[in-house]
Length: 431
Image (cartoon, rainbow, N blue to C red; front, side):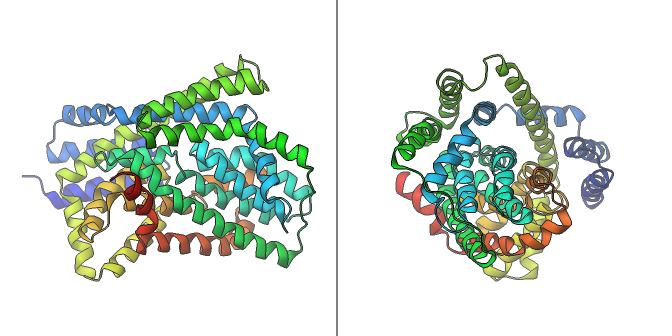
């Protein structure tokens, strides 16, 4: 008779060893699941069926549309227009380009839903601009990298769709709304910190813009910003589901980019679709492998064991929540966000719900927690892209990022222990 304890050890240890050997996460998940299934005498056909079933969800249909829309708008001049619009709003304050950077990330995050896409597009424009205007290179990269985290919690966010799937069908619309206020709070907190650093270092104000130019810039940016309005407005009014709104937004982005802005030729669509397909293949294969891994976790009763283990440490709700935050934060430093959402959700969701936390709140908390990991070495995707664009070493960046980390963790603690911040809008609009 196979031992459950040995099976759990095979599953977790083989997964960790494969990751240490730099095997891609998708293959690490699949191989560790197969090894455990062979030992535990689980039919491999069952594992295959779980992988297929994992990507059959209709909720996942929104992801390719969001990916394509983000690719189209990232390539079609939307980033530059959003930067110009943000400059109109906050460019005249001390250290204005940093404020522009954060506000533009808030706008672009509401369209692309991706932190790495934010750093790649916004950072490629603003980091060189900030350095040319007299901003230190490490500060320019720090602002860009940390502000990009707004993109994963400000709706729309394909990471929230992944969480919804892992959590057993939590409302995507409520998740989108739950991330709205925390994303804005994070942006405002980063803007305040950036302002004080700018004053201390003596960074310049932005140039004055004439009223006529402000009107022109705002008008040009409106078409790009309307994408987010379509997505959120459609979901809130009940006209569209999240998937339908993503499809409409994709079509709208195509029309605006190629027939209104017309900065790139229509033949670029081939490359955009190719890039989108590569991203989608990575996401879906990861979800399939993680679904099989999650099935094995459930079969071995790992979530229940984890719950009992945490409760033996302490029965104090606040202590347990802090331990969970610390665990997720540490894991976020060494693994990417999507696989961690898929792995941790079935394990930790029963724990936090037993502590009285709503699954919607936990989804936002989990995603923001993992977003901080995007900015931390050794595996932070946003950090690596930012350092590459700004040509700054990770060692130099780590010290500069410390006050930004403090602000982000403070916002994380705030939304963890004050649930109304996350739940106010969903409860208001979904009664």
